[in-house]
Image (tube, rainbow over all chains, first blue to last red; front, side, top):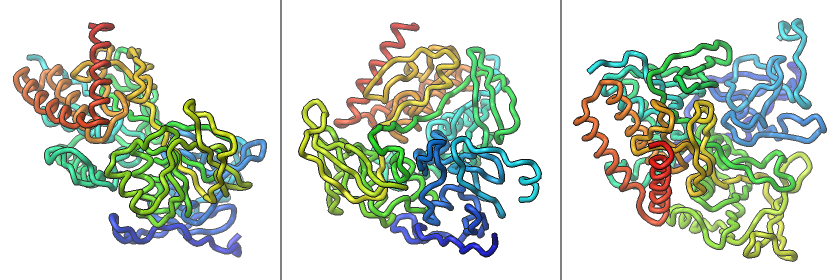
Length: 119
Length: 368
């Protein structure tokens, strides 16, 4: 797992005429589909993934791709499996060090307890 | 006068809810402010443009600055704010059912409930609208202004109202390209100041134009547009394709009335204010005694009007709980109403003012 290449934050808005330069934040490491990426402490999983250029967050049970729609916890378009728990709204769930984030198909499935403990 | 000791519960810590809680606390009334998010402020911190109005409305000040000031004020007053707390139930006896951190569930007995739950962005379905890259304008706004990430490089904005043109401009400020802003109506819908800025930046603004479909395999690659006739039907042969990787929908908002409906508040359909909304009187009281509605739930307007409505409800609730005498309540209310009236002027404001008058009249008629 550790050999997978890291995803870099290609979509981060670092400079802004009104908001100024992006302030430094503590780095949090999370894993997307086995690939490491660096996130900003306190930000939602969704923004870390969008920053890293991830285009598809899940598939419906018929295989149609989804990413996000409302971005504020209303619509459930951006749900993913987080540390073995499916259906987590990534737009309103903050990143935590070592978090494992995976795409799910349909409503996903719960990881067995031993799999979750092994996280 | 006997004072009510059970708290007033304010649901939603956006501009309306914060102002309601501030007025209650200023008057010395017990108040609890609940919000499902991990940070207060609602949508205020996404608003990086300057607000309109007069000096006392803090015109020329950017939304997020106003948000910071409101938070400081609520902190200074020592308002009890419970974050990560979702209100999932409300009955006509003012039992508030809350869930904290998605784990702990409890009920609160409130003496007054002020609903400041806001509004939800509308969707408009078209072939391809579920593709990654299609999102609401508010989603893009949250990502660029709060989280500082770009959701797309070349964006189509659907809808030319204030949200559409403001988000189009903010996308440019964040470094994206805006391929076009399209509008199905024959005229652009936003405030001239905002529209002009987008136009000056060279963004095509296309009226009488709709989106026919979005195309792409794993995400948006193209948007197909067409001109519409007088009945908003696409005119065959007018299709054109734009290469875009994101499509932002800015097609209006609908009041989030779920809790008001649970409590049994009478609703009324007001298209100018976003659709079904709870009836309210001039103190923002709904048809259910002691339940108030303020901000976008009481008709979609703006943060500035939402704040004044919050104040109206907070002032009245504090009075009805025995913490403000009638004279003081009337004085504070008159000041607030005067500022509110000043905000509902001009072409757009006047329309909202007239619609609000209709709401008050209906409330008076249906539940005097």
